Image 1 (cartoon, rainbow, N blue to C red):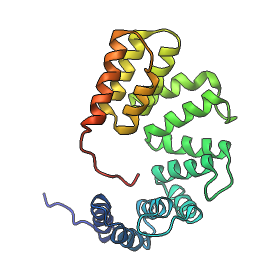
Image 2: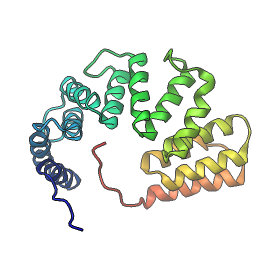
Image 3: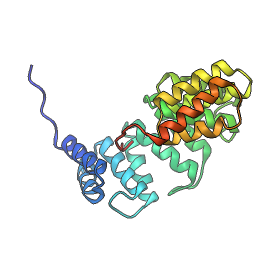
Amino acid sequence: MDTPPISVVETQLMLGQIHLDHGRLQDAFMMFEAAARSGEPRALNMLGRAYERGWGTACNPAAAAMYFHKAAYAGDPWAAFNLADLYMAGRGVAGDPDRAGDLYAMAARGGVAKALTMLGLLAEDGTCAMVSPRSAPLFFHAAAMGGDCWGALNLGRLHLATGDGPAAAHWIRVALEQGFGDVFRAIIHLLNGVTDPALRLLATQAAGRLDHPPSRHATGS
């Protein structure tokens, strides 16, 4: 069976990601900008990310929000997540936790597990009317089961707060295995001062991974 040909837009996105991974930010921006002219949702999202992060262009959160909005409502769940982040931070748009919650829910329905973690955090701090504070553990658990290391870490944090050391250790270990530098730092901070040997071991392992981090490639989502 013949492999279907790769489209021009797919090629542009692949080249843009390669340039991004190698620090060639202006070249990456040119590829994402060219791809976005097609109106393809993933390409619009990546151009939004370029404006949000300043990849090869000046940071422009308002332009990022515009492209994320177009991409999200054309069906890209990561664009919905990225737009929600802007509403949470009040960057490029007026801050609006309820609007952010709607967009995180849209992203979660599209399969973005990290959006479930954000819904859990919104539920926990009570800033979003659409989610109940009691639902936070359910969101964190769903995120963790979906493969989000932050969901696992937050679930471990809740178990730690209730004194359930074995459950806390389990979920923090999951976060450690799936995580990266920021997650390792969060684990160290969370476990600072704990005396449980299993939890202390996890803190030590997180510190070791900071000293010898696994290789990771930049992503645009």
